[in-house]
Length: 232
Image (tube, rainbow, N blue to C red):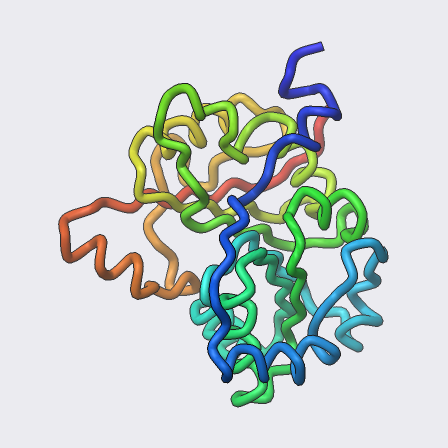
């Protein structure tokens, strides 16, 4: 059994490195006020229709950073529900401040690593879209095995997406983009929506401050949008 198909392999992968940071008073207050309203327990299997009190399609974002782009997507798409995952508490606090200020009702959050959330809290075939924007590239060759986009991870994502759902990834590291594209193309459960090319950034993915800064410096960004299909 290869590493990428070994279930123990997923236990060793982490979607993002745990980065501790000092909370501002506003972030701390937002977590205390907002987490009981919007926070989710990764040990409990969610039921999306009950959780959001509707049957709107669900987008899951892995690693939402400071949450501004996720909040923008939720605000701009009231007919879609959003679940965000982020282990960086200042980012969680920042997003909760926005959610509380804008009174957004179509968003919920996990503050635990994505692999644990996907394995224990997300029902099979319950997601319409999974987003992975600018994951840790682990750019040193000896660290490539730590990259989250590997076959085992895609197997897990595929099991949570509905048939015809989408996996949307973006990175500003060319080598990682090539790795993602190769791994996705080799997976029998995904088909490139813009085959054989990378996708243009859709309007649904807002530009972040991080991305804008990189673009000003001449950094390229590669988007990939793959659609799920039934594995025969």
